[in-house]
Image (cartoon, rainbow, N blue to C red; front, side):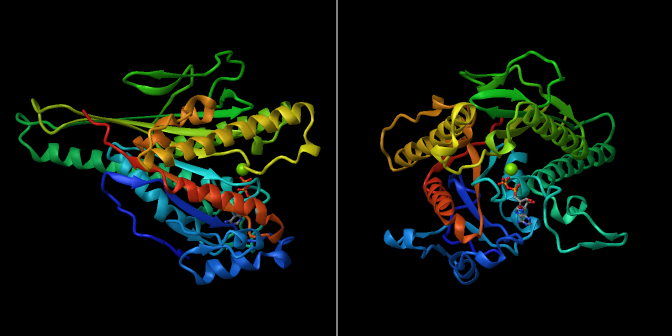
Length: 395
Ligand code: ADP
Ligand code: MG
């Protein structure tokens, strides 16, 4: 159930704010009796998302977002409200960015990707009896849905061009249309980057660079050419598996690393022979961030401490960049510290206004997690104030 949009936001025009969606995941079996009454009641009844929890009410906090979804929202609802607009703009040549933010266990990976083997289900019944959630197409997250839409669009454009060509006198005008899709998958862990699509044993260390014309890019990162949504999603899943293999080998958890899956779409089109060549190129970043929970200092020592501070560093760098961007949006002349972390440097263009950017703030319904929830809601509230002026990347 979509309770938003809460405020009127200009869609389709050049000026936007970062769009923010809040998703409260369903309680798991251990949480059923401790669901935050505030979140439960408010998301049901209100168009806005006020938090009457003591901490929030002290400051009388009321938050509002572009979309607020509670536990009965389907994956398709989320895709329709934020996946479709970002993907369609991307297909027109705008850079796009979907970022999942929130504490560990709040539903970031579920939202971006879909269920895992631990997902609790109400015995989804299929023809073959009880189905595993991970096999249920209804449960697929944003990434597979976005990929499907991208390739469906490409196929229909190619088919339309083909029809036009057949309809014409063969000797005259011949339309030209070509698409190139590439993808890459980068993990940032402890301020170190890993190429999740590289061959095992590859010693190339990816490195973020900035180019006058090209903008920010990652040198040494595998860019795989792909032909279909299935092939791309396969690669994505293989990369995610590499992320997990790395985890057990190096004794780390995926919740401590950021994962950035990027699709690069280039198109060249000419309406007829001799017409001007139109080139478009755009990037779509699909980002599953590390858990945003604050580390309890007692639990952090040695490697863990280093790890915790690196996570804090990039997430607090993200917070600082957002703060600076809010000031810039208010007309202040401010330096934006993109280079303070790998994550913010990599997402510089996406955050800094050249992309259609949507933040998906994922929160837990549990009363015991309310402090982390409020911290996520505050972060999301600030992000909503950032103005962006996305432009088409077309020659
Ligand atoms: P995160 O990536 O933020 O750490 P996960 O996406 O792994 O969190 O979610 C934690 C658990 O809750 C997983 O088992 C996941 O499948 C389940 N879950 C999260 N969101 C939902 C949802 N909307 N519906 C059903 N299960 C969910
Ligand atoms: Mg996760």
